[in-house]
Image (cartoon, rainbow, N blue to C red; front, side):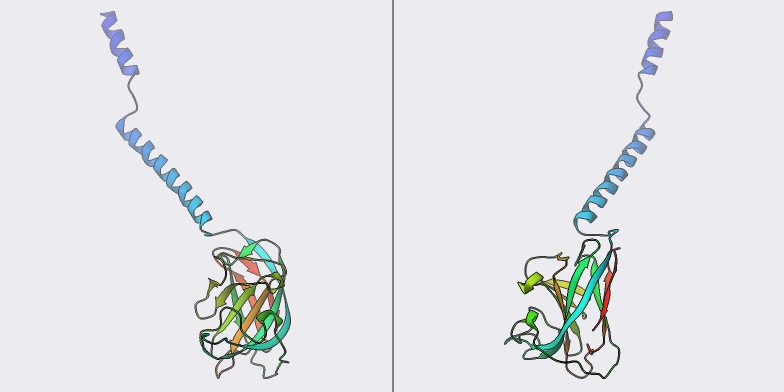
Length: 208
């Protein structure tokens, strides 16, 4: 009799967790794994970031350029201003920085000269899509290549050579271009500023 009771007690002690507890554990493990996977994927795709950076910019040269044959818009002339990027306090890329242009409404004109970063009078890779919009082209240090363009019409970057994202770094040039038609934003004494996107905090501005 004692042997039978002992066997029953032994079998009772060998029981696993209940089905309800097992289900809860499986759900919890699945949620944790999904959260870890989400964090990894958003990080790889350049998602939200805790970047906080200041960008140093200096306006260096005003001028104009004309689109090459077959450009868009065709045979258009744009006012330009070259901005030298002095550096950033923390790495920022086209994935977490945007550009804004605020006009002053001033009627004062600025001297128009050659724009060395745009080549011999020809606008670089991407131009404003309309006569009343503006665009910016990020040019590599030394003017070797046009890396990416930022459009006021779309509020986003487009790769010119290579792929996005492209890092902003000291020695690069940001060439601002604006149409010269009626209603086009004037670059004269306008303020160009950078701002953070995708959760980044980016500051920096310069008055042309």
